[in-house]
Image (cartoon, rainbow, N blue to C red; front, top):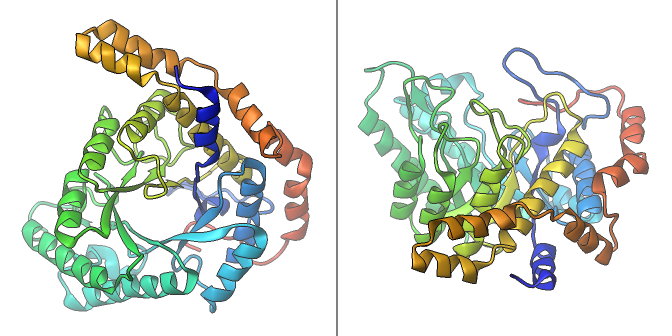
Length: 386
């Protein structure tokens, strides 16, 4: 079995990026439920993100979404983040909320609309320059609702052309992370619907283009860990958007729907050499009915627990069983690790680095929730689309 001290050392090095939008109000297309104390601007989002890092110790960066997090001076925002004890992470583009994008953005049949969308992506790279961010994360709602609505191949040509222009603008230490989603909001076809499409475009672009796996963006029954293993084998896995869903893309807390799946994914990450800073571990969640900060802390803890279990897999015993063709023993090795209660190990790790062993309880004792509810009165709360 792996040495527990080595497992603790590996866990202490883990970094999980939290998304700025998860601190704001969110909901479904039917209703967005407001909560007291929700941030009203990017500065307050960073203060909340700093609390998550304070109590978990493994959430040192915050992803921004443009224009939801637009400010006049991004250098000043980055400096403020550092003052809070965190840093700015991936820059996420938004080409899905303008009326011009009804028929698509960079895949739109109108060249003027495509130009507008590409200019926004280039603006996001400018923001990366100002914030020191490494990753430009791209997700496109582009697609069609009806057969014959547009030329499917032409849309792929437009997609490739736009991505190539943005790719050329990237700096030496910057990356493009392309996300896929098999449906929604388009009902007939989606222009980046699966990992194969994303991989094909990234392969053509070059080594600075990588694929993002959003764990909620797959059809039921999809073997996500196989996708992860394949992308790692091809050196094309750039990162994760961690969340979970029961039916469609619900953006629930990671591990809420299927913690065993999260464990299997993390095992393939570790087995494939992806447990490095080159693979971005990011949350992408919307907390509709639960309190924002505790939900994000819980999500971070869920990733930690799945990682700890994956690190505990006896890989020598597993390899031997696989060589022997011993199906039951091989499966038992994985299940033994998954069924291990790693919470005492993680509590011990937190105490070792000066943290409370129970981050959720520590947050509730801190009084931060009561403080922000009292202070953040008036103004416009941040939320989906704001």
